[in-house]
Length: 334
Image 1: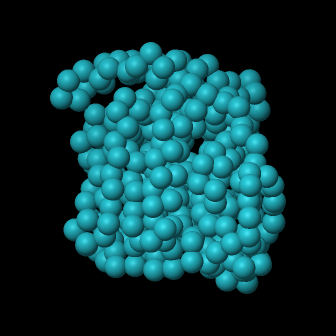
Image 2: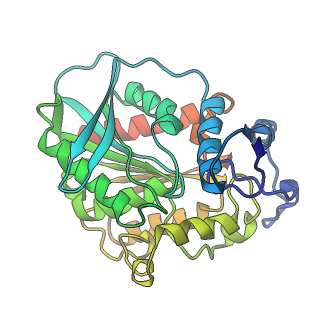
């Protein structure tokens, strides 16, 4: 049995230090429900693992399954592989209750610091989004670092998006009503993708996106020891994702470097108050606004990184789902 606190690489990475001593301008106050979540994370145990990365990936799955709450039923879930020249991309299609032909569709790109995550970590979120938006969800199980560093994951997401657009009618999807959602590292990939293909998409939602590999913002200093994420392993995750010095300066790898957002569709950015990624998410949104893009930013007070996984305890998870659904509906009608 291996219990991991303070050395995890992704959601569930809890610092051993007392997070109640974390400072902002004033002392951070955590709500009783957030405290309950963090207490639960520290008690998760992984009984088998080949190495620290394997253990952290399993920890992420356990966390998501235990905190997500009851999974909503959907109409159909299909798993298939999208062929490319060198690789078959696994995807899962969620069809919501009451699905009809010519449905809207959403490409979902999951988080996990580029190194973890997949079907099981985000299953509950995908189900909720399908039912709330009435859209078919295409969940992309893209390749992960360090085994497959940049640009493998981005290429998978791009190829899957092109495949959905090209095969929309066969899939019962309206090709004029497709959007994209990415959380955390998935927000990184979504931003890079919409910079290239965004004129073919109706909207974009970024949920606490990672956008800057320097981890030099004030929120990273404030929350470097948690809650949920810690700076030491954030640095390590970016190193695994960016395998060369050239990649570190590539805007498609590090979205805070993007200068041209002319292809980017209307965007909703959801941020969490007690999240080290908060400031870089705000900066990314401001860069888009400076380019003339329609951007709405929504800050979830008292929330921590990964709160979308915590619907079994937090009401804010459902509130965010409903906000995303409203934004989706508004932009699909344009």
